[in-house]
Amino acid sequence: MNTKVCRVRVNGAGDESSVASRSHPLEKLDCLALTQRYHRGQEISSQTHPAEYWYRLLFGAARRGVVRPDGRRQIIDLLLPGDFFGFPVHDECGFAVEAIIEDTRVSCYPRRRVETLANSDPMVAGELCQIAFGAISRLQAQLLILGRITALEKVGSFLVDMADRLSGGHADRVVLPISRYDIADYLGISVETVSRALTGFKRRGIISLAGTRSIHIVNRDALEEGKRDNHHRPAPRSRNHLPRMAA
Amino acid sequence: MNTKVCRVRVNGAGDESSVASRSHPLEKLDCLALTQRYHRGQEISSQTHPAEYWYRLLFGAARRGVVRPDGRRQIIDLLLPGDFFGFPVHDECGFAVEAIIEDTRVSCYPRRRVETLANSDPMVAGELCQIAFGAISRLQAQLLILGRITALEKVGSFLVDMADRLSGGHADRVVLPISRYDIADYLGISVETVSRALTGFKRRGIISLAGTRSIHIVNRDALEEGKRDNHHRPAPRSRNHLPRMAA
DNA sequence: CGCACTGTTGATCAACGTCAAAACATGTGG
DNA sequence: CCACATGTTTTGACGTTGATCAACAGTGCG
Image 1: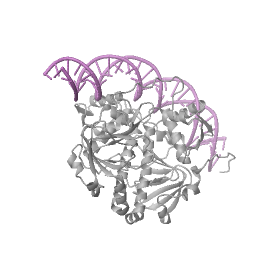
Image 2: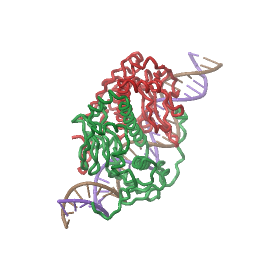
Image 3: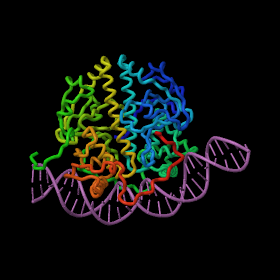
């Protein structure tokens, strides 16, 4: 039982037109949507002006996260073209969304009007559900990555996940829209470890780099397994006391 | 079960009636719901018979997760009384839901009928959205915990989170429905580390234990910060190159 | 009683965070 | 165009955290 993720989203890494005009759940509401542009680092929405819109990212990338009292930053969700955000989740304590790339473009759907429309049109309501399920998918995938043990595994599966999300299929090239610092805060590890993991993969021929952001995936399986360099570890002894979970 | 130990169950945690009869989103559909009972470790739903129901947990607890090819188990979601699950998320690659507690009770809502009803009644559709948002909330909270760095922080905020979820408010007592092994696989750390973290908290007077599962939270703030024992670390130097995220 | 599971504690060692410094990239103003 | 400042990425050295192995205590059960 290996992990072949079947994504529905088809392509559109940074190609605005292919995303903006593609069919999507809230299509009917595009007439009342407002498209906004943001600079690098600019705040798109925060808990301060409490969510007057639903958003859909058209071009660029954005991060959603918090900074803890101790100054550490944590990125909860990474938003790529086609992704929706701005759900009315109550305990959004201190989350903020910031553009990562210059000239990031976002569709803003007035929340009130979306909701009144959903109350009269069951189709729209169902599409809102679909959007929420998409967000659940993203969060689950991220949980699977964060739950991994070693930094190698985290960085490896992050790369695979990004390649899939940005291409819509199983691409072998990916241009990372974010810095190593963002990756680190997204994966809950330090910048240096991210860098070392990447150079490690490169040295072992699992990936190759063109510049610092453009990555070619040579050996996808090795990335997902994120194995250590040399000596095979003897596979942890089976913990028989624990149930199976999935036949 | 005729032990002389007087369980200190504080409130809603395992109290079925207060959950089963409480008002909730799919209330209108309770008439066509079927209540099932499960044994410890029994599978409630898996990807094999692909999701014919929406579920709502009434009593007990359940875990949703996967086992990786290497044998490691990972728990993605912990389901407590009142929680819904069984969303139609496509890339549920190998997830399964298992009861954790003997005689766990679950409401099963036939998916087809829920959806047809949602198509005719916008209220129902809106409630489905609310349910999805609840799941998003849970996943986000878990991401915040997993993203933390030290094991102390993870275990500490896990305890606080559990106390809040099981009581519905800010309780200072919590009876853990799950074993240390489950906690470990839920937090992505080893059993031994979980145990050591708990004994550490106890030794420092931050919590006190009555039995192994019943925990009294003495110093909530210390739990959330999860500070190390003695010497205060000098607070990581501010990384000025990173934007603020949340004013 | 023995057996299976759960929970705790100790010792060892590698992974990773932290500190430090340098190479590299990018932009801004002269 | 260069000089300079600022941010990003990489590499090295070192100390601590936590995974792993191992052994044992507590608990429930047939």
